[in-house]
Image (cartoon, rainbow, N blue to C red):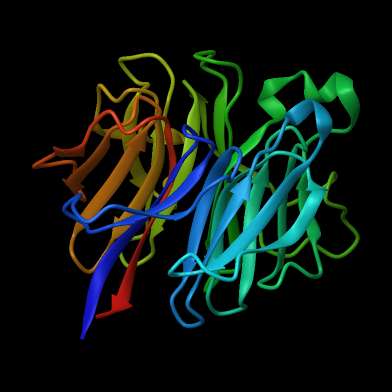
Length: 294
């Protein structure tokens, strides 16, 4: 028997990892004192929760931590400074790899689930001059292991309309480098400020949050994964308070969304029957949904 559980991050209150039921009840703090957590992933098989800590960007001291699902045995698996400003985090269950975007590091990265073998797969810039160009900042990440493809967002400046969603192979092509890849595709550009990504591989659909200005920003969006830039994304939900995290319950046909204003939402996969589960929870960032043993 299994039961769904949400794992959610709060950057208020010193930074916390919290667990709650999918209806918003039963909230409990698993780990506190997390600094500025942003991305979260759950390893049901091994009973672990992983999260990124953005740290203080000028100090280049980002890290990734892990704990048991009850909050015990907390450990840092990617040391401080092993990544610059890690954002959304994904666990790819086939290869047992962690993938994340590194904002001011201008990278998409991965490691083994114990934090070893850290690699840079995409590098969009080098040095302080490039770092000031927010169009180079990588934020969201998603993986399609079956087709060997990696997706990520480059958000651009706040409400700048320069955001992009891109795709490339999981592996750097032979003869290429992370900062000079021949296989990068821009799927969507001119977006307000795209943040976190999720994939529904069964329907080949890409979902993402956007924290830019209305009408196209502060939204949840979806589009066919293979449609490319010629098709306008569909807005599913709007009027978020700076939308950040998104998690899909594919079997249950629903999604969960967080915003920096402190609200947690549930809606159908098409955006229908949206409702607020929690409000005024501080500043919320990443969220993950997992089926756990009851």
